[in-house]
Length: 102
Image (cartoon, helix red, strand yellow):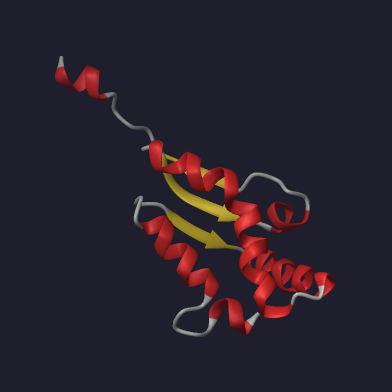
């Protein structure tokens, strides 16, 4: 858990910065962080396996979100890690550019 959150270059912080480039706040629930650590222990990959577990959970949204202007926040939950559920996306209404030009 500490490796995921505490060091200056902690994995959770790295992924959060990556999402910030697209103006999206990435949030990991406490349960999700525990699940990531547990999964690494189960796989016997230790700290090195943490990145692959996070990448696996975020793979689809990581490539979808840059093209979506309505997503404000991406929340990773325990179900995201354990069951492969899609992270929860918090969206806002975005004005259509074509309507604004009219």
